[in-house]
Length: 335
Ligand SMILES: [Zn+2]
Image 1 (cartoon, rainbow, N blue to C red):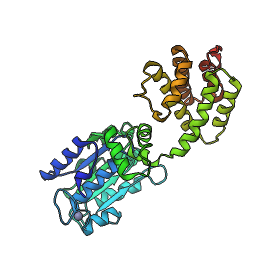
Image 2: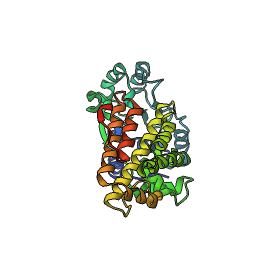
Image 3: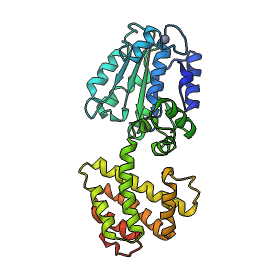
Image 4: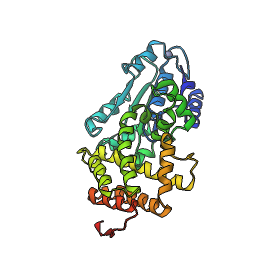
């Protein structure tokens, strides 16, 4: 084990390694970027490298120090996460105190603030001075997938690294090594996870395919103009889920399908679509719609997504989408 196992975001890794090898004082960092792309992993790698008993500027993953950090029981490596919805002032008061303690059992104290965008404002302002001048024996690493929700005064006191989504070939390589997905499913999983390993590893592919199957029935019925009512029935089923998350997830699947049909209208080769395992079926659907029809349907779905933020009537909006897709006209006054 060691830093060489870290995959993706090579410039960030190199910069961290260089700072470690130059013996620079690693004071306050901010790791930002979507979840599941290695921010937390790198923070842990740094904690191990700063405390490893066998290696300097890298870590062995076999000494007592590395093993304790892996188990989250090392006294000098502490993680703060939201207590309920927020990271509270009491937690940051503790950090403000502990940051000045000498290392208990290792060489360097590391404080990781996970989901730092959930810092309550008073908690955030309470650590400004600490972030600016932590002692030489302590480092603070803030992790966030929404850095714009952090106070500017927090951001300006940290050395910021913006992590990028993982490149396609890297994500596929990791999935082959670490996941239970079949080799045939990996390209689809990679497309659906949008560069996030975390998203890929938690993806329920069976559930995705089940919901997608229902949506395809609706699209098919609608595009064929067989039955608006049949399409509406499927949509009603998919919107009947009480949980908001479930509806949003179905809407997201629908958007991807419509986007794929739109892309296939321009480029039938399928190189750019998400649902690559449905290439042929979606190609058939794309041949049945006009460019204007599918473009208008995609637009009406975009309106629906944006409208949800202002409590738009979901059923009316989906109705509009189905009418647009089937090529029927309907006054847009329902919006
Ligand atoms: Zn070690």
